[in-house]
Amino acid sequence: MLVYIAGSGAMGCTIGYHIQKNTESEVILLDYWQEHIDQINKNGLEVTEKIEDRIEIQALKPPQASRKADLIIVMTKSMKLDSMMQDIAHLTSEKTQILCLLNGMGHETIFKKHVNLDQINMGVTVWAAGINGPGSINISGIGSIDVQNIGGNEEEGRKVADLLDDAKLYTKYDSNVMHAIWRKVMVNGTMNSTSALLECKIGEFFSTDDHKKIVDDLVNEFVEVGNADGIELDKKEMLDYIYQTSESAKDHYPSMYQDLVKNHKKTEIDFINGAVVEKGKKHNISTPYNDLITQLVHAKEELQKAE
Image (cartoon, rainbow, N blue to C red; front, side):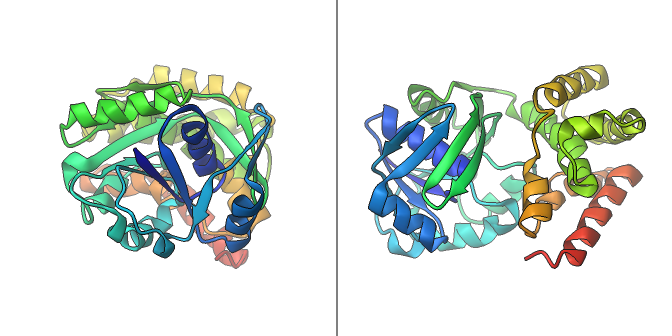
Protein backbone atom coordinates (compact mmCIF):
# COMPACT_ATOMS: atom_id res chain seq x y z
CA MET A 1 0.00 0.00 0.00
CA LEU A 2 1.27 3.48 -0.89
CA VAL A 3 0.60 5.94 1.93
CA TYR A 4 1.17 9.69 1.75
CA ILE A 5 1.31 11.88 4.86
CA ALA A 6 0.00 15.29 3.77
CA GLY A 7 1.53 17.63 6.31
CA SER A 8 4.63 16.13 7.91
CA GLY A 9 5.13 18.07 11.09
CA ALA A 10 5.42 16.39 14.48
CA MET A 11 2.21 14.35 14.33
CA GLY A 12 2.45 13.61 10.61
CA CYS A 13 5.96 12.26 11.05
CA THR A 14 4.84 10.24 14.08
CA ILE A 15 2.14 8.51 12.03
CA GLY A 16 4.43 8.08 9.03
CA TYR A 17 7.25 6.69 11.16
CA HIS A 18 5.05 4.00 12.67
CA ILE A 19 3.60 2.86 9.36
CA GLN A 20 6.99 2.78 7.63
CA LYS A 21 8.67 1.04 10.58
CA ASN A 22 6.06 -1.60 11.40
CA THR A 23 4.22 -2.52 8.17
CA GLU A 24 4.96 -3.48 4.57
CA SER A 25 3.42 -0.25 3.28
CA GLU A 26 5.52 2.44 1.60
CA VAL A 27 5.25 5.88 3.18
CA ILE A 28 6.07 9.22 1.56
CA LEU A 29 6.06 12.35 3.69
CA LEU A 30 4.67 15.48 2.01
CA ASP A 31 5.50 18.95 3.31
CA TYR A 32 6.63 22.43 2.24
CA TRP A 33 9.44 22.97 4.78
CA GLN A 34 12.44 22.49 2.50
CA GLU A 35 15.06 22.18 5.24
CA HIS A 36 12.95 19.50 6.95
CA ILE A 37 12.57 17.62 3.65
CA ASP A 38 16.30 17.85 2.91
CA GLN A 39 17.34 16.60 6.35
CA ILE A 40 14.96 13.61 6.17
CA ASN A 41 16.14 12.63 2.70
CA LYS A 42 19.80 13.04 3.64
CA ASN A 43 19.94 11.63 7.18
CA GLY A 44 16.61 9.87 7.72
CA LEU A 45 13.89 10.80 10.19
CA GLU A 46 15.14 11.02 13.78
CA VAL A 47 12.70 10.06 16.57
CA THR A 48 13.44 10.87 20.22
CA GLU A 49 12.00 10.72 23.76
CA LYS A 50 9.44 7.89 24.18
CA ILE A 51 10.96 6.19 21.12
CA GLU A 52 14.64 6.49 20.13
CA ASP A 53 15.21 5.64 16.47
CA ARG A 54 16.19 6.87 13.03
CA ILE A 55 14.69 5.46 9.83
CA GLU A 56 15.01 6.02 6.11
CA ILE A 57 11.84 7.51 4.66
CA GLN A 58 11.20 9.64 1.58
CA ALA A 59 10.06 13.26 1.87
CA LEU A 60 8.80 15.47 -0.97
CA LYS A 61 6.89 18.64 -1.65
CA PRO A 62 3.35 17.75 -2.83
CA PRO A 63 3.91 18.78 -6.48
CA GLN A 64 6.98 16.48 -6.66
CA ALA A 65 4.96 13.35 -5.88
CA SER A 66 3.40 11.56 -8.85
CA ARG A 67 2.03 8.11 -8.00
CA LYS A 68 -1.63 7.64 -7.09
CA ALA A 69 -2.19 6.96 -3.40
CA ASP A 70 -3.95 4.07 -1.74
CA LEU A 71 -4.25 6.14 1.43
CA ILE A 72 -3.57 9.79 2.23
CA ILE A 73 -3.39 10.75 5.90
CA VAL A 74 -4.00 14.47 6.19
CA MET A 75 -2.06 16.13 9.00
CA THR A 76 -1.68 19.72 7.79
CA LYS A 77 -3.00 22.63 9.85
CA SER A 78 -6.78 23.06 9.55
CA MET A 79 -6.59 26.49 7.96
CA LYS A 80 -4.37 25.07 5.20
CA LEU A 81 -6.54 22.02 4.50
CA ASP A 82 -8.29 23.30 1.37
CA SER A 83 -5.05 24.38 -0.30
CA MET A 84 -3.39 21.07 0.60
CA MET A 85 -6.27 19.10 -0.92
CA GLN A 86 -5.88 21.13 -4.11
CA ASP A 87 -2.12 20.46 -4.14
CA ILE A 88 -2.53 16.67 -3.79
CA ALA A 89 -5.48 16.30 -6.18
CA HIS A 90 -3.18 14.64 -8.76
CA LEU A 91 -2.38 11.91 -6.21
CA THR A 92 -5.98 10.83 -5.63
CA SER A 93 -8.27 8.51 -7.57
CA GLU A 94 -11.72 7.13 -6.78
CA LYS A 95 -9.95 4.27 -4.99
CA THR A 96 -7.93 6.53 -2.69
CA GLN A 97 -8.99 6.64 0.95
CA ILE A 98 -8.49 9.85 2.94
CA LEU A 99 -7.94 9.87 6.70
CA CYS A 100 -8.27 13.13 8.63
CA LEU A 101 -6.62 13.29 12.07
CA LEU A 102 -6.68 17.07 12.44
CA ASN A 103 -7.54 18.97 15.58
CA GLY A 104 -11.01 20.48 15.68
CA MET A 105 -14.09 19.74 13.61
CA GLY A 106 -15.86 20.71 10.42
CA HIS A 107 -13.13 19.39 8.11
CA GLU A 108 -15.52 17.01 6.32
CA THR A 109 -17.12 20.03 4.63
CA ILE A 110 -13.80 20.80 2.94
CA PHE A 111 -13.04 17.17 2.05
CA LYS A 112 -16.41 16.80 0.29
CA LYS A 113 -15.32 19.46 -2.20
CA HIS A 114 -12.44 17.24 -3.34
CA VAL A 115 -13.39 13.55 -2.94
CA ASN A 116 -16.47 11.36 -2.63
CA LEU A 117 -18.02 10.91 0.80
CA ASP A 118 -17.24 7.17 0.90
CA GLN A 119 -13.52 8.02 0.59
CA ILE A 120 -13.51 10.13 3.76
CA ASN A 121 -12.43 8.69 7.09
CA MET A 122 -12.50 10.89 10.17
CA GLY A 123 -10.35 10.13 13.16
CA VAL A 124 -9.16 11.40 16.50
CA THR A 125 -5.83 10.77 18.20
CA VAL A 126 -4.34 11.43 21.61
CA TRP A 127 -0.72 10.78 20.62
CA ALA A 128 1.54 13.72 21.52
CA ALA A 129 4.61 14.85 19.62
CA GLY A 130 6.79 17.85 18.92
CA ILE A 131 9.45 19.05 16.48
CA ASN A 132 13.07 19.17 17.68
CA GLY A 133 14.26 20.73 14.44
CA PRO A 134 14.47 19.85 10.75
CA GLY A 135 14.33 16.08 10.32
CA SER A 136 13.84 15.37 14.02
CA ILE A 137 10.72 14.80 16.14
CA ASN A 138 10.00 13.83 19.73
CA ILE A 139 7.15 11.52 20.70
CA SER A 140 6.14 12.71 24.16
CA GLY A 141 2.96 10.72 24.64
CA ILE A 142 1.93 7.22 23.50
CA GLY A 143 -1.76 7.34 22.65
CA SER A 144 -4.47 5.77 20.53
CA ILE A 145 -6.50 6.51 17.40
CA ASP A 146 -10.21 6.09 16.59
CA VAL A 147 -11.28 5.92 12.92
CA GLN A 148 -14.63 5.85 11.08
CA ASN A 149 -15.56 6.08 7.41
CA ILE A 150 -18.28 8.74 7.39
CA GLY A 151 -19.61 7.73 3.97
CA GLY A 152 -20.78 4.32 5.13
CA ASN A 153 -17.84 2.47 3.53
CA GLU A 154 -17.08 0.50 6.68
CA GLU A 155 -15.02 -2.12 4.86
CA GLU A 156 -12.48 0.47 3.68
CA GLY A 157 -12.60 2.27 7.02
CA ARG A 158 -11.73 -0.92 8.85
CA LYS A 159 -8.81 -1.52 6.47
CA VAL A 160 -7.46 1.92 7.36
CA ALA A 161 -7.90 1.24 11.09
CA ASP A 162 -6.26 -2.20 10.78
CA LEU A 163 -3.24 -0.71 8.97
CA LEU A 164 -2.70 1.85 11.72
CA ASP A 165 -3.16 -0.76 14.42
CA ASP A 166 -0.62 -3.03 12.69
CA ALA A 167 1.68 0.01 12.77
CA LYS A 168 1.49 -0.04 16.61
CA LEU A 169 -0.57 3.16 16.71
CA TYR A 170 -3.22 1.43 18.88
CA THR A 171 -6.12 2.08 16.54
CA LYS A 172 -9.72 0.88 16.53
CA TYR A 173 -12.68 1.34 14.22
CA ASP A 174 -15.24 3.52 15.98
CA SER A 175 -18.82 3.57 14.71
CA ASN A 176 -19.41 6.80 16.67
CA VAL A 177 -16.17 8.67 16.05
CA MET A 178 -17.90 12.07 16.06
CA HIS A 179 -18.51 11.68 19.78
CA ALA A 180 -14.76 11.22 20.32
CA ILE A 181 -14.03 14.19 18.03
CA TRP A 182 -16.41 16.45 19.98
CA ARG A 183 -14.83 15.29 23.23
CA LYS A 184 -11.35 16.19 21.99
CA VAL A 185 -12.62 19.53 20.66
CA MET A 186 -13.86 20.28 24.18
CA VAL A 187 -10.44 19.43 25.60
CA ASN A 188 -8.75 21.73 23.08
CA GLY A 189 -11.43 24.40 23.47
CA THR A 190 -10.92 24.60 27.23
CA MET A 191 -7.12 24.13 27.33
CA ASN A 192 -5.44 25.17 24.08
CA SER A 193 -7.12 28.52 23.63
CA THR A 194 -6.99 29.53 27.29
CA SER A 195 -3.33 28.55 27.69
CA ALA A 196 -2.44 30.45 24.50
CA LEU A 197 -4.27 33.56 25.68
CA LEU A 198 -2.76 33.41 29.19
CA GLU A 199 0.66 32.26 27.91
CA CYS A 200 0.92 29.44 30.42
CA LYS A 201 1.08 25.68 30.79
CA ILE A 202 -2.18 23.74 31.03
CA GLY A 203 -1.63 23.02 34.73
CA GLU A 204 -1.03 26.69 35.45
CA PHE A 205 -4.39 27.66 33.96
CA PHE A 206 -6.17 24.89 35.88
CA SER A 207 -4.58 26.12 39.13
CA THR A 208 -6.23 29.57 38.86
CA ASP A 209 -9.23 30.51 40.95
CA ASP A 210 -11.34 31.32 37.88
CA HIS A 211 -10.66 28.21 35.80
CA LYS A 212 -13.70 26.24 37.03
CA LYS A 213 -16.23 28.84 35.91
CA ILE A 214 -14.45 29.41 32.60
CA VAL A 215 -14.34 25.68 31.82
CA ASP A 216 -17.93 25.15 32.98
CA ASP A 217 -19.30 28.00 30.85
CA LEU A 218 -17.45 26.79 27.75
CA VAL A 219 -18.54 23.18 28.23
CA ASN A 220 -22.18 24.23 28.72
CA GLU A 221 -22.10 25.71 25.21
CA PHE A 222 -20.25 22.74 23.68
CA VAL A 223 -22.74 20.27 25.12
CA GLU A 224 -25.83 22.24 24.13
CA VAL A 225 -24.62 22.77 20.56
CA GLY A 226 -23.34 19.20 20.22
CA ASN A 227 -26.64 17.72 21.35
CA ALA A 228 -28.50 19.97 18.91
CA ASP A 229 -26.14 18.72 16.20
CA GLY A 230 -27.11 15.11 16.92
CA ILE A 231 -24.17 14.12 19.15
CA GLU A 232 -25.20 12.77 22.55
CA LEU A 233 -22.93 14.53 25.04
CA ASP A 234 -23.15 14.23 28.81
CA LYS A 235 -21.78 17.27 30.61
CA LYS A 236 -20.44 15.42 33.66
CA GLU A 237 -18.72 12.83 31.46
CA MET A 238 -17.11 15.61 29.39
CA LEU A 239 -15.96 17.54 32.47
CA ASP A 240 -14.52 14.40 34.05
CA TYR A 241 -12.54 13.72 30.86
CA ILE A 242 -11.32 17.32 30.64
CA TYR A 243 -10.07 17.35 34.23
CA GLN A 244 -8.45 13.95 33.83
CA THR A 245 -6.65 15.19 30.72
CA SER A 246 -5.65 18.47 32.40
CA GLU A 247 -3.88 16.50 35.13
CA SER A 248 -1.94 14.28 32.72
CA ALA A 249 -1.04 17.30 30.54
CA LYS A 250 -0.40 19.79 33.34
CA ASP A 251 3.26 20.37 32.39
CA HIS A 252 2.47 20.79 28.70
CA TYR A 253 2.33 23.93 26.56
CA PRO A 254 -0.43 23.03 24.06
CA SER A 255 -0.08 23.34 20.29
CA MET A 256 -2.03 26.60 20.09
CA TYR A 257 0.40 28.19 22.55
CA GLN A 258 3.32 26.93 20.48
CA ASP A 259 1.77 28.25 17.25
CA LEU A 260 0.68 31.63 18.53
CA VAL A 261 3.01 32.64 21.35
CA LYS A 262 6.21 30.83 20.44
CA ASN A 263 6.13 30.83 16.63
CA HIS A 264 3.71 33.71 15.85
CA LYS A 265 1.65 31.53 13.52
CA LYS A 266 -2.10 31.62 12.95
CA THR A 267 -4.05 29.11 14.99
CA GLU A 268 -6.80 26.54 14.42
CA ILE A 269 -9.22 28.48 16.61
CA ASP A 270 -11.92 28.61 13.88
CA PHE A 271 -12.04 24.80 13.89
CA ILE A 272 -12.25 24.55 17.69
CA ASN A 273 -14.07 27.26 19.67
CA GLY A 274 -15.02 29.03 16.45
CA ALA A 275 -16.60 25.86 15.05
CA VAL A 276 -18.96 25.74 18.04
CA VAL A 277 -19.92 29.36 17.40
CA GLU A 278 -20.80 28.60 13.77
CA LYS A 279 -22.74 25.44 14.64
CA GLY A 280 -24.53 27.39 17.36
CA LYS A 281 -25.70 29.93 14.79
CA LYS A 282 -27.11 27.09 12.68
CA HIS A 283 -29.15 25.87 15.64
CA ASN A 284 -30.02 29.37 16.96
CA ILE A 285 -28.01 28.70 20.14
CA SER A 286 -26.08 31.55 21.73
CA THR A 287 -22.40 30.82 22.43
CA PRO A 288 -21.02 34.03 23.98
CA TYR A 289 -18.10 32.41 25.82
CA ASN A 290 -16.76 30.51 22.82
CA ASP A 291 -17.38 33.59 20.68
CA LEU A 292 -15.31 35.77 23.02
CA ILE A 293 -12.47 33.21 23.19
CA THR A 294 -12.42 33.06 19.37
CA GLN A 295 -12.34 36.85 19.04
CA LEU A 296 -9.58 37.20 21.63
CA VAL A 297 -7.38 34.62 19.89
CA HIS A 298 -7.87 36.38 16.55
CA ALA A 299 -7.01 39.71 18.19
CA LYS A 300 -3.84 38.16 19.64
CA GLU A 301 -2.96 36.75 16.20
CA GLU A 302 -3.21 40.29 14.84
CA LEU A 303 -1.07 41.73 17.65
CA GLN A 304 1.51 38.97 17.17
CA LYS A 305 1.49 39.58 13.41
CA ALA A 306 0.84 35.86 13.01
CA GLU A 307 1.26 34.43 9.53
